[in-house]
Length: 192
Image (cartoon, rainbow, N blue to C red):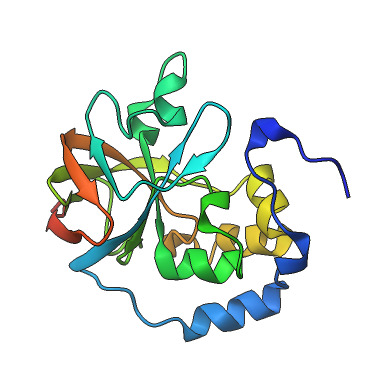
């Protein structure tokens, strides 16, 4: 196995990587995620030293995203990629026992993140914050493959499943507010 490159965050555990057939089978047995109202399952902040923190609450802001997260440390932070979001059941399935912080996403929600349910421009209330789904695609990459296996990357990149946003979505903060683990998530609006 190649040595871990710390610039990419925590390594994955190859013994936990699932073959494509098993991932597809498990995906088919996941319960349907809520469409209009869900909950915040996990919050993650990526520190400068690549350590992932799991605070119980954070104050999201339009200029800061997740304060202290990697997004705000970039030269020109892209608001379209301000907050990374993943569906909790899909994340747990892909992680297969690995800590969910290995993903690097900021928010894990019990909510249907599919294009049909949350098209670009949809707005969600999470705790006291208001967020909007951006058009930027959240794709798997070499870091994702290293952490979860090439078959996991094949699953989330499968064109026939792409509409489900299995790798997640990007959101931007519209209204500042506190978000805590366990907070309600409500779809406030969807574009016409």
